[in-house]
Image (cartoon, rainbow, N blue to C red; front, side, top):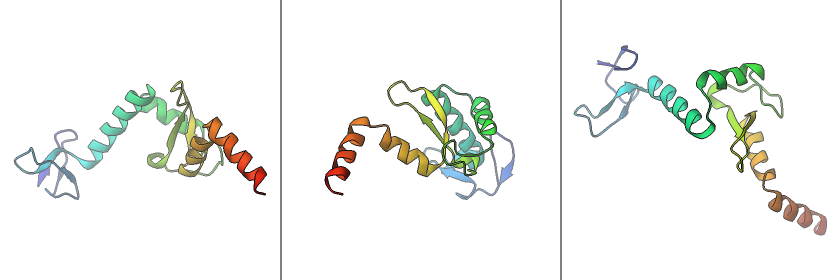
Length: 122
């Protein structure tokens, strides 16, 4: 058994519950995978979007747990934070499919070329 130094819960000392860490004598991280995931999300939201987890969760609740474009329900841990790549300003939360399309459509020059291509080859 191994105790997570973050949540203080005990789990079997396996890679099912702890990430590998070759710098540790045990070969396992000090934090369980659940705590690592929360910390990683917190760090990512702050670093990339200047958002707290609470602000991000509130956005999710304000959208009723749904994608802002297609309206389909999305699990919180699978939702994507859409933002303007020029200004880094956060827009809304999207499902993976809508996020990919917005990334393509956000490239105005590519969009013009694709439109020209379709018109010429219809």
